[in-house]
Length: 347
Image 1: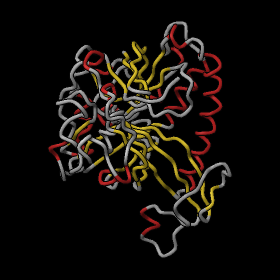
Image 2 (image 1 turned 180 degrees about the vertical axis):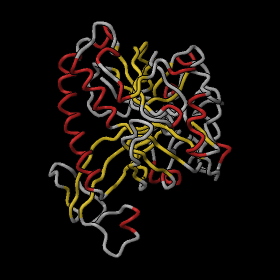
Image 3 (image 1 turned 90 degrees about the vertical axis):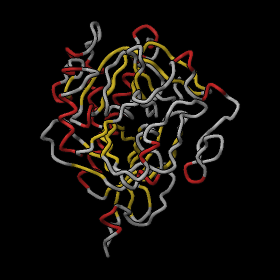
């Protein structure tokens, strides 16, 4: 990291040195302070996560969160009991993952860029306590012998599967799937942390089967916009084929939503988030976005939609904005009671 707060080398980020709005302007969001990020820390690991759920002080009882397997049309806002919107939320939920990290990088900065506000986990370098966040899977591609089955896709750096199992095998699979996950930069900061990251997929209820991916690397990260793009891999056919089917369904549903809501974004301001509060099973929360703030060439939002520790990195969907795949992720909460996203390119 250089003196301007820019990550160099493999994870070099887009950065405008003289643009003071690149950070989080005080007049829009107030001072960031320790605790406004929303990862869930657990010294006791997985076993203690339910304890944090029960003892939550931000949202006691979690009345504004709906378990994804119980979510119905009636949970949508008045006047918006729309089947297409419901389907959109459900397929977004299918792409939501829990992000488990058991390492804090020594390269984390002491402060958020261009502020004196402490950056999360700066003083925890090398510690192995579990912390959880959320993320969303996008762009799934199947590869065989190093060639992508989607001819429009660029390339891969590999000629055989590079998951942990295959790296330790004398006969690695020649067929595999790669996919991207977007989460917050303060959840997975760099490749050091990515090497200690596990993604839990399809965690829809407390007794869901354990499905996980443990080979993760960082493609790009911006501490200014608070977003991290991860590259993940699996050669499990059941996971790969399921993800490709979900992404195809997502595209189809999104186009219906785009056509229906694209001109109505400012009027209705519908906002939803699917996340893993306190590292527990997937929950849906629906609210409204309040304000859109420009951060350099990108935008971030404030919203009433409920979030909790464990929600950091979850996809933030402001219905009606013109994007299909977005790196707009949940970043934290404000003293005013509103929550806010990182920054992304939205139209």
